[in-house]
Image 1 (cartoon, rainbow, N blue to C red):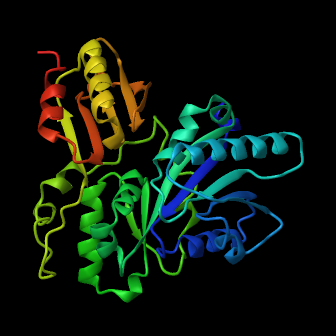
Image 2: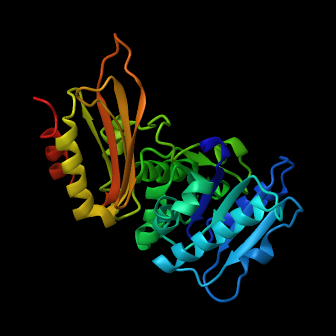
Length: 337
């Protein structure tokens, strides 16, 4: 079934980060792929659509009056279903979709569309959220704009633009900050939107069976402990969005874990941006892979544990002002003693 689904890439990033430049790069390259582009413009008059190159292989659809409420989710679902119908009827030819969000958007409602609408889920596979961050102004934007932090928190891949305008030390400082906000999203410098398509398309960041790419040591090493200062810039970075990793070498009790996760999702769902884990569950000879977006959570069985393999669990939580100590204590109480 999944092989017949249309992959979707969500391209996000704050105003001026370089999303349209990157999208033009994708559309103009001779990659032989047919792409439908959905522009989530903010306001009644679309501008970005006029800036995009037009090739016969691309279909560009505008979605105006964008905001971060459920109205956008409804409009997006309608457009996606219309595109799928026209594709099935032979009116349009495309093999993937790229959604460029407005720079003011929290990607949450967009990603939820693919889990909350059955018709959309039957036609599309959410491949990944790609977030573009401006290396020159990204730090100041993260300081001022909660939406920018959310965009980083949701990312499966962060692309750092305008790196030629900053020093190596400035770039490294911003990279460390981005990884503290979201340690599961690799940060890749790009120049003028030039990046390999394989770093953007078909990376399966939302695939439950994909590898859990987390470096938990990043949060404890020396460079992960300098968040209270920024080497001379004069102020602390009190980011609301942050991440923590929970690891355990004992099996989870399935019922207790399900009850606890359901409880924290009910209480903190709006502040939980992304959470994902590969778990050792008592009584199962297979890994249990789970992930969630806000209050939507799902799980699946992964590959079997090898007979001589050391079993363990690893989970990452990315969200806004999450009570890390309470969540870790609760998870610990779900382990088989």
